[in-house]
Length: 181
Image (cartoon, rainbow, N blue to C red; front, side, top):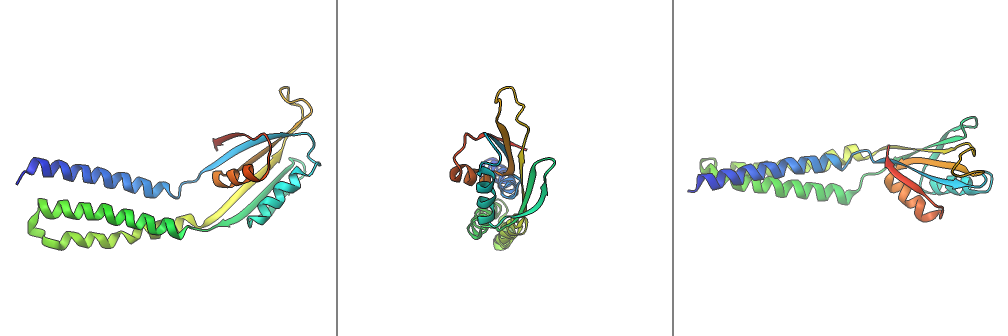
């Protein structure tokens, strides 16, 4: 038996599993971003369009601050059943590879290593529990005293990047930004 080759295969399998763990953890990472557009008049109906857009997407207004000209929304985000199953399958594949390498490297354990596959549903459970959460959206209208956009109001929206993408497709403005917040 070629132990150096099997040892390196085990090492690369463990590295792959570490990457898989980070991939599963990143599936529930907060991806809040901020975009901005310049509008001529906050009373022009654009704000009503934005509010209607978020209301249709099951967000509700939780706070209105007329002094800061800000509106806060909240909504429940549901986990994706497809992604939960997909992550479980990826975990099963990674654990299967580990079990195969271990069963070849340490044959005295027999098929006991394949019981590691029972851990794979934990990836889907982890995702399912963490992905279902309350998301917040913040909409702000700034002062029109900006030298690079005289007479225009900055409309700044902070939300999850998928929600911002949907908004940009729905409401055609010259959106700028998309930086993580």
